[in-house]
Image (tube, rainbow, N blue to C red; front, side):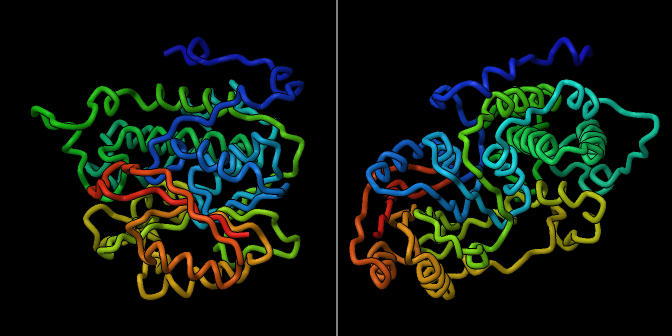
Amino acid sequence: MDMQSTLFNYNNQDFKSQNNFDSFKFPSTRYQGSKLKLVDWIINETKNYSYETVLDAFGGTGSVSYSYKKIGKEVTYNDILKFNYQFGKALIENNDMKLSNESVNFILNPHDDIEYKTIIQDNFKDTYFTDDENKWLDMVITNMNYLDNEFEYAIAFFALSQSCIIKRPYNLFHRKNLYMRTSNVKRSFGNKKTWDTAFVDWFLKFVKEANHSIFNNNKLNKSLNLNAIDIDNESKFDLVYIDTPYISEKGSTVDYYGFYHFLEGLLIYDNWEKNIDYKSKHNRLIPKKNVWNDKKLIYKEFDKLFNKFQDSILVVSYRSDGIPSESELKELICQYKTNVKIKKYGNYKYALSKNKKSEELLFIGE
């Protein structure tokens, strides 16, 4: 395959001289819980408040941070997951660095002077991807670790992560279910063509999208990898956007660390095997305790968070069927804010969610 013929070219002047950011578009993603389809509503509901600096405390894909960056705010993106932090590095903190054609070609080809390990091939056979795909992943992540520029690495990691996600049934890594892709059966869901499209094709697509999404809003934007409660708040963010992991009223949780452990593992490639839970069928990473997934602790954690950022405009994305309940969450915010509004988007169904009655809520406290 001639890689050079499949690559893209861009004019740096298009990005450096443009003052209107509307033409820039957040890259596509199938990340669970992404607010990409709701972000225009969120921005619109907060547009009349007075603020210049924004903290996105649970940044996820970065789509909300990206939209605040587009309207000229100084954005601090944060996420406790290392792979999400790389998304923020690539798309929020990064103002002008693109992943070059030279670097793409380096990533996608084997090199005689590099010794390639077989960590994915050895630990994830018949789990998520085919043998050839596992071999490709071992090569690509090894090559990526030779990149000198942190932003080029972040863009490459974003593209690799999205390529892995889109080739997975349910877009998750919570089960050993490669057979769902490879079985010769009649299918009631999924897109076999998407799953079977070559990794290299997806990677090039997502690199192109990421490169074309990068712009400079002339602000000092940052990406952090911290527990939200540990973020330095001395400078006092004008607005803090909060979108925590979700606990349903029945107590089921969204465990992003468990759902996307494979992407976290890629970031600790050389030490991955030391952190695998070999008792699990799908060789997940050793689980970590998360208070946001504990219905007994989440009330106290919300209170600590609201207390920490009580001098900021608080904007909280939530679902009407969650723990705490809508009224309980409002009561928690009201301990620190005299004016709390609740905006309702209406029925919004998340992928894989069975609850059709859930409403998307936006709490705004000032």
